[in-house]
Amino acid sequence: MRKLVLANSPLCKLCGKPATVVDHINPITLNNLSQFFEYTNLQSLCNRCHRIKTLNDRGIDSRFSRLKEGKEIKESLEQ
Ligand SMILES: [Zn+2]
Image (tube, rainbow, N blue to C red; front, top):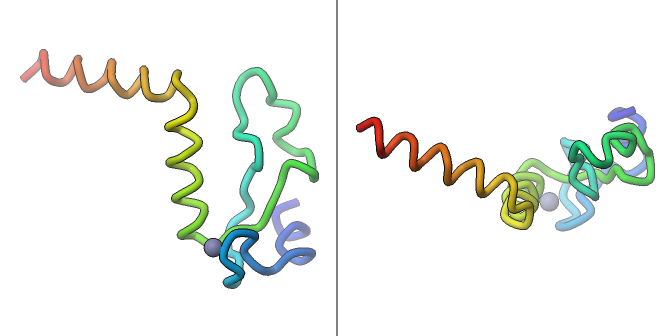
């Protein structure tokens, strides 16, 4: 699946450089696990754009930030 996506769109969707990773357009959560292998939910990205997008996706997903906050609070309590 990953190779197929890269073969069909070898360039990064965001910056046009050669793509190296396949990204889920809609981030996969427990609610949309079925989209994990959906071709229409995949796009080619280069490493750099993928990293930026992943960070943005996590920023939007409040569950991730809350998890992160909880971890940081726990760590600060343990110090
Ligand atoms: Zn890129």
